Image (cartoon, rainbow, N blue to C red):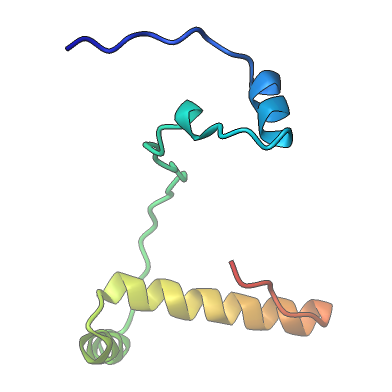
Length: 91
């Protein structure tokens, strides 16, 4: 069975329909990907730091990279909070 093509409707029209309380879910496929730019960097760590990171990663059952990202995010948030006197909003 062939899919019937729908006429193209402007975003403003969809917004107006939603404002009127109409169901506009058929205009959205929920099939999308968020692409965030990634910049790869190399960081030199001591063997002791690697051992600590690996131990924490094993304890949490996550990758070493996940541990590094989490710890770095916490450190940046703590630094920004101290600098600006506020906490970062949870996302």
